[in-house]
Image (tube, rainbow, N blue to C red; front, side, top):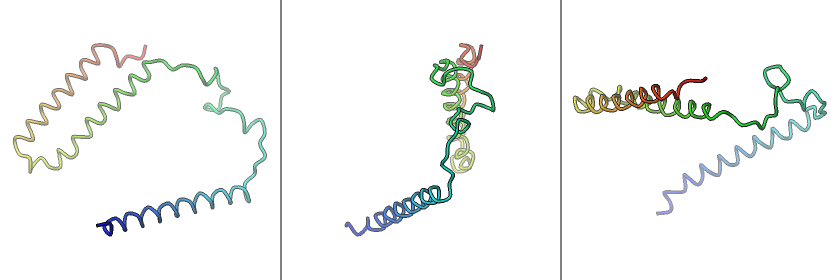
Length: 122
């Protein structure tokens, strides 16, 4: 029974060794070849070529998170359309109407968010 897990264990060991060798080689190359002298220019924060306007620890507006979460939700729901489109012929009429119900719920949710002003940035 444990013989079935030997390839998985071998795969994990090889992957760990390969990753460790690459990280070690990168570290050795950076210590031997890299320039580790830092100056004030390297230590300064970078923000689109300008000096930062405020402290980097300021709170973000909640609307930023709301729009980001809404984008992720609607984007992931739209991702369900691709496998459905590929297998639509095999699903038949039942699959078509099931997806139409799903899309109707998605559109109702999108209209609700739009009317609530969740997509407004002002």
